[in-house]
Image (cartoon, rainbow, N blue to C red; front, side, top):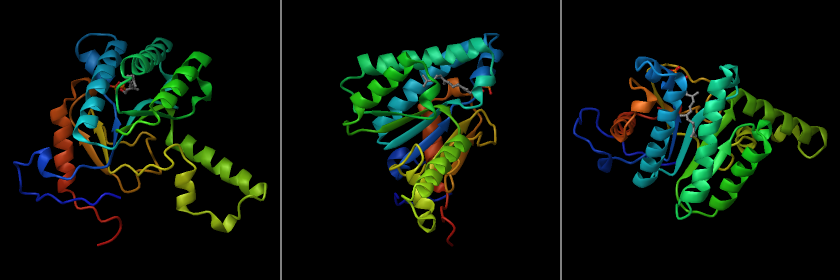
Length: 250
Ligand code: FPP
């Protein structure tokens, strides 16, 4: 776990150079629909703009030295949206995956996908696996893209896996602990998020990193995701640095 140099609450002139950055940031990329509505555009235009913001912010996080970034792109509940909206998000996701393979070959970012990938068609699955395979030995930021991800779904799968191991005699029920659960979910081997940013002003977790966010600091920001700039990320990082994290201690 990273040690945080706590910034003084009174210090209004901090820059990100003055603070210790969180190791792992999660972002709920919210507000695409409202952004489009405000402009009289279809919701899909909001997602296209949101995908551009995602590219910029992921690059910025990598440039400033963030070690892990997890973005919430599509939840297990988002299938309830209109068909054309789901298709548009899937297309944007696919475009990004193709781009990541073909254009980012000299990149240092490690790309991972978290979520239930079994529902994706074979071409998508192939792209997901190729991205993970091609980037796995890189030494830069780990970018987790949460696609068809749900925190509850992730825990249900972990429970099933552990229950099977107990049933098959591979695991003693008394050895089940929090570490085993952390090791049985998509983010196994990664540190928990320190900071979760939710643009668009909503105060909800929306099933994002339920287990992992036990001690995450939340930063709710009044900006819609397509409008989110690197300056907004800096603001969240500075706000985070002023928080007093106690992890249940005093
Ligand atoms: C939430 O905003 C956003 C989504 C459900 C989709 C997010 C997808 C992208 C940013 C683009 C695709 C991703 C990649 C990785 C290229 P909302 O639609 O719920 O907004 P609203 O609350 O204003 O309606």
